Amino acid sequence: MNNVNKTLYIPLYGKAYVSKKNIILKDKKAEQIWGQAAFDLKGKSKSKWLAYYMAMRSAVYDDWVKQVIRSNSNAVVLHIGCGLDSRIERVSAQNTKWYDIDFPDVIAERRKYYTESGYYHMLAADMRMDEWKKHIGARQEAIIILEGVSMYFEPEELIRLLSSISRHFNSVRLLMDCYTERAARVSKYKNPINDVGVTVVYGYDNPQEIASKSDLMFEKEHSLTSKKYIDELHMMEKIVFKHLFAGRIAASMYRMYEFKKEQQLC
Image (cartoon, rainbow, N blue to C red; front, side, top):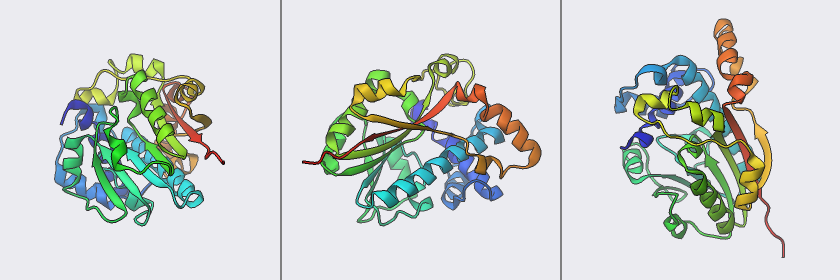
């Protein structure tokens, strides 16, 4: 795997770590894969604070996906940059049309642990290209998960991807976490992804600008660190975590935005 793809082990470790502690989210699959993959994380990428943060981010996505599927039962789900994540199992969506999408070497690794079904598919694709469209039917409702990947797209590439999604589907609900431009600038000096060799990332400060350029509508901003999950930490950990990851400084570095495209009625 290249260095960007290796970043998938950071959230995998976080989910396995909290699952073993029985807090934030339960993910036996992450525990299993982490135990077998034996990837050697170093430095900040293996801190318990980052593990809590990665798990909370995933739990917020899980909550959103479950809610949106209930309101859009016929929608297809695209988890772009899925890594080794087991979200389809955590949200009990095995009977939902679902595509886990990532680069070919990531999907090759993923196939060691997951099996396709009539509903569930793994798609090896570079989402910066257009070939992925031929594998997924157009003119349908889509739920799009972009967790932990927007920062690796150059701005033009991200807009092109979002625009292609908007054109391909009748309606779209999309959730995406982003670095801010400030975070992108400092990431080359201080970021856990540096521990797996990644130093170039991109940030986005204005969700309205993203929306206007991609033919999507900006719906709202979400919190990456829900209070209900912070409250699962022990008292001193809760205090430290709030200072590191849930205050104004954290908000100036990392955001989560929801976009949508409404179905056009004839």
